[in-house]
Length: 234
Image (cartoon, rainbow, N blue to C red):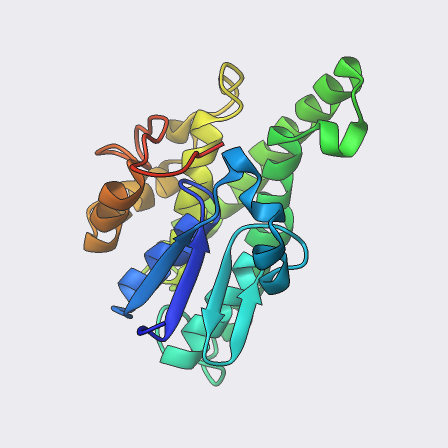
């Protein structure tokens, strides 16, 4: 590995957030596709890096790191950008909302996208879980929109943070998945998050991700299913 970092990724997965962060930090990195269509996440070589078989994993000089929130926080602290410093008064607010996004918002998306993992094969149980999850997600989004409305530097402010990148990726996935079951979501219902998505969409890091993962020209404000040059987004 000639670069200090190697990102194990799948197109339009949680690794997208890490890709955006690496590009925002202008860090050299290499990528390795974990092809979900062929079970790449359960290959012995990948499990040696991430025994949970989940994406992403970032290989660093300190060893492999998994869990999206952990990777983002490690990068921010290592490179002194995209998050308030430990001595900054805004640090506590940043941490609580970063982990709200990782542990609550993103976790709810997994239940929405993969209900059978939580309920088993019963279609009625899956439908009930999805219905409850959509209600919860609506509440989560309203709280994040309220946060962005305050103008606080944690979300939607200046400078850009890891949380901005994370939330925008989640907005994308809510608009797209599960296919045919996205009528509950409208970006217009959260105007401050919509403004954030439009602003982030113009950044060079996003333009690079569009090319690398086939995300389409408006990946956050009017997303379309990814058509990546390699691998499968689902």
